[in-house]
Length: 219
Picture (cartoon, rainbow, N blue to C red):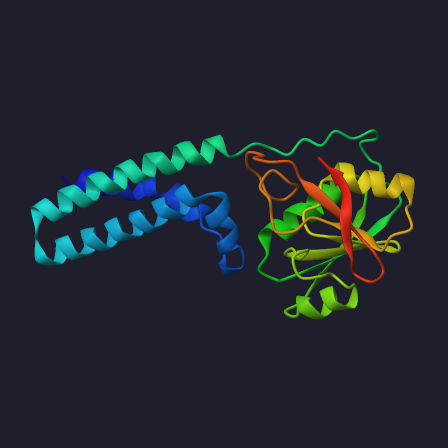
């Protein structure tokens, strides 16, 4: 009987690894609600197992262990289905060669680091500036409410807010429009740094000097 408990704990591990930090919990909920539900159920099952071990209630232990195994298998299937690698469709693979990016992020933001890595792969030299006060950075670049994401990048004279797809950044670099920058609200899965299945077009906005958002490109 103890083997099924161990198996349940092992299978639950992928669920725990899927948990986002506090900054990303809201995004995780509306993008992957079943993952969050599975994590909660898994934790409840672990608590029930602990209680069952203390009180020696075999029926509770059996039911909880079975639930943990089912949730663990569901978590692994979900993890495999959402582990796609972002593949940008670029005109020039290293279009950022010779250019620098400064990326402002929270010290605990892992997906921000993933976006920085995607920029490096495109040829940019990326400098990461960690700060606990991103609001000040966003205010300085007139990022409006509703247009914010988890990190802010500066490329030359342009601000790039969030997990903007590389195709949009390449378009910005090539065309050099007279705007303040571009951005992508939230943290949509499927973008650089946010692995997973793309579920909708990425609606990238352009930002005026006054902080007004207009449509830039859908990818």
